[in-house]
Length: 140
Ligand code: AMP
Image (cartoon, rainbow, N blue to C red):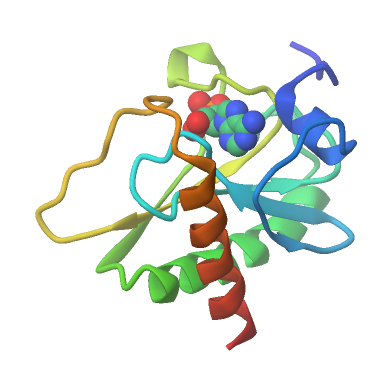
């Protein structure tokens, strides 16, 4: 399957729809997931288009993974998490629903299970407050 630039993350990258941004550089954007599986669930995406990890240029992966690590540490600190789950889905059979490569960063707590994937939409005030926590942790 080829990349289709009508996907929602391509629209976010073009500024056509808003996001709760927490990090941006020349190659990467990170923002809050609107249907968080745990408070602080965020997404890291490369700006270079690829459908998922299967068709991504290794040069793109080499730029995005250090930012995944940076945001994982920031989210762990911002949400005082016991751990961080990083997930990344490829094709519908694997659970992918948006076809622009992205990494999920999900704060985890001992004994707490996750809410469903693409479950309930979070309140935008909560997402904005959580984005600020990540930004503050990155700045610390
Ligand atoms: P995946 O199944 O890995 O493709 O996950 C796509 C993720 O994008 C899901 O966790 C959705 O909650 C999330 N999502 C969908 N639309 C948006 C949006 N406009 N802004 C932020 N996150 C979104």
